[in-house]
Amino acid sequence: MKLETSGGVQAAWFAEKVRRAGFPDAEAFAAHFRLKPYRLRQIYRAAAKELAADIGDVTTLPKDLRAALAERGFSFDAVVPVEVRRSSDGQTSKGLFRLADGNEVEAVLMEHHGDRNTVCISSQAGCAFACAFCATGQAGFARQLEPTEIFDQARYFARELAATGKRITNVVFMGMGEPFHNYDAVMEAVALLNDPHGFGLGHRHITISTVGLVDKIDRFAGEGIQVNLAISLHAPNDEVRGAMMPVNRKFAMAELLAACERYVAKTNRKVFFEYVMLAGVNDTQEHAQQLARLLSGHLYHVNLIPYNTTPDGAFSGSEAAQIWRFAAVLDAAGVPTTVRQNMGRDIAAACGQLRAETQPKARFRAGLKR
Ligand code: SAH
Image 1 (tube, rainbow, N blue to C red):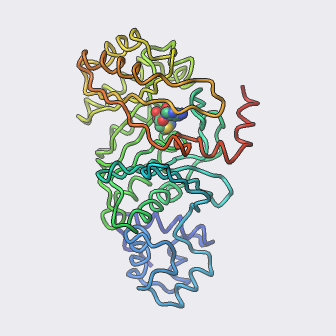
Image 2 (image 1 turned 180 degrees about the vertical axis):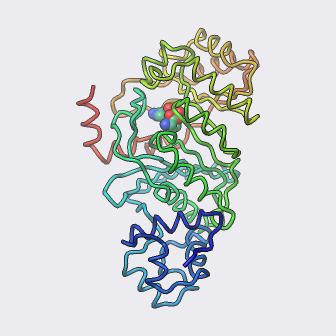
Image 3 (image 1 turned 90 degrees about the vertical axis):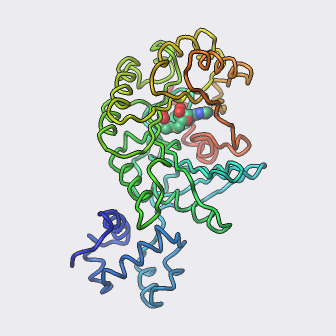
């Protein structure tokens, strides 16, 4: 039987969900339950568009079919929330999610005074890039996430928001992991988020943040989609960057910035640079001037990020006044700069922080590594 799909996205979603229920492919699944194409469309739509929590809630399906699907282990969610914390100001919720194999990942919802609802999602369990200041990097790499394990993090918060008549306006790949180290799955997750027959989030409302994998930046430039690109730069020179980001040994800054120029030339889209402000490490006036020289005159935007201290406490964040002085130098040089609003400090909302608390083993491994 041929599946009628919305541009292959629905087929990819089914392929993963039915494999989890023990079927070789969607055709075998459809044949087993004698499902016509319209039933498959109903199921996909219920999960991706109507955000149903569970197959049992989909009242458009016959009751015995729902029971049969549930009994066979067909499930909408590849991630199960194990702990959800809400910050005291009510604007940030952080979820820790368990995967089928027991690995855990984090996602965060930030409600910006009702005008934007941004969800930050993870692309990997752990991370292989070991940035010295990052809690996820300190704990090491566990495994790649599959597309719906990524997508279902957004689905969870979309469902929570829908309960009060709100919706997700932005998704950022700034949770655990390096999205470009799991490139194909991340692009499939983007397709699921974007599918007009499903979740329906516009490409321009999605941002992928990378540690700076040059080959993948070039590949991404060729995708022809309007998804935003953010680069974790964090330093104005190779000496400072190399000391805290091992990836800089593979792709030095000149090479990275050349890739960013190629990206802008090809797509005519802005590149966002993230710069986490670390006291005494990368936050002096000289660093700011050096960064300004490097970035001025391009279609670039700098986002200065107040640092959230990680369990090992090796770095401390710059004072607010120092951050604003740094921003002023960039501003004077004509480099568009914003200072990221800090949210959810009281609930360990920065990358990898909550898991580091709940999975002490991960921290122990990090301790052995250094
Ligand atoms: N691997 C991707 C996504 C990682 S997290 C990347 O490197 O871009 C998204 C951003 O959060 C990155 O810029 C990362 O450097 C930053 N970050 C990590 N730990 C942080 C912390 N404790 N405080 C503030 N920002 C942090």
